[in-house]
Each structure stands twice: as C-alpha cells, then as structure tokens.
Image 1 (cartoon, rainbow, N blue to C red):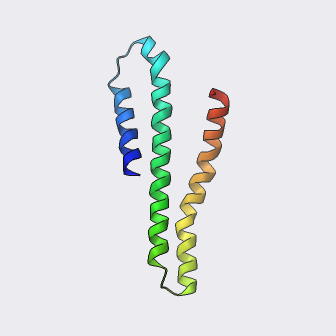
Image 2: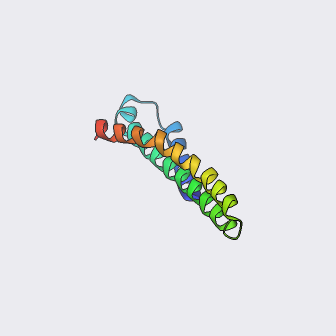
Length: 97
C-alpha cells in the first residue's frame, strides 16, 4: 500500500512539473494520469485489505456475534469501494484501449 501510494504521488508530481507544451499533453500526460490513478487504486485497495486483515486477526478470539459485526463493518468499505470503482475502470479501459 505504501509503495503504490508513494508511486502515485510521484507520478502526479511529475504531471505537475512537466512542461506546459501541447505535445507533452498530447503524448504523456494522459498516460501518466492513467498510471497515477491505477497506482492510487492499488494503494487504496491494499490499505483496505490490510485493515480488514487486522480486524480479522483482532477478533479471532472474540465472541461470535462481535466477530460477525466487525466482519460486516470491515467488509462494508471494500464493497462500497468496489461498487463505485470497478464500473469506472471497466468503462475507462473499454473506451480508451
């Protein structure tokens, strides 16, 4: 998560520091922006999976109903994130590839 987060920050900073010529925007900015968003997506996904794994380890010895509620609370952000992001990435790659 940390590596992909830092990679996306570096890519976004490289867009900010690129020259403002038309050829730069035409050739490289689109590719850099796509790559930055992909790394940002992996960063958020791996952070959420790490959070979920930590919750699963913490509730391993707890009571059954507490574990069930914690599982639901941990998996809810992942489901919402997937619901909103996967159709966007699907449309993006179908239209641009």
